[in-house]
Picture: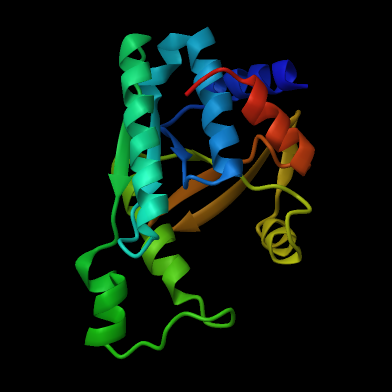
Length: 204
């Protein structure tokens, strides 16, 4: 199963005409995605020049999580240099006027709640949209979204018209003046598949 998935990732990256960003948050699902993409790049290093690994630094993360993520990204950068891969690691941040404390203290926003999650859009989605707009048209974002993870996640994937192209699950989104596609290589993974892949793919 893992071998098939690495080959799928390699095929999608090879046939995509545009910049590619791999979203990493430090969680298990995004870690699996990073491992799969990295394994695919090792098989075809020429693809690496079109691929960036990105992390959104909201500046309000737990210090433990933030330190772990940046430590991991540092190791990823070193591994890519050692393997002669040309991918880059980018740490994105929200614009000052959209940052957490400017919203809360400066503009009087209420703290985020389940029903008013303004922070997700301002702190995570918009920095990625701005990055993609600068990167160029027809961007592909590789994300660790899975069916069955939660009702809310399933609803979001369905609302955005997820489709399967061959074995690859890709959906099209618009925002910040550009069009991007989300590629979800582990959309059909269950929790056991996630942990199995984390243990068996020898990268990072």
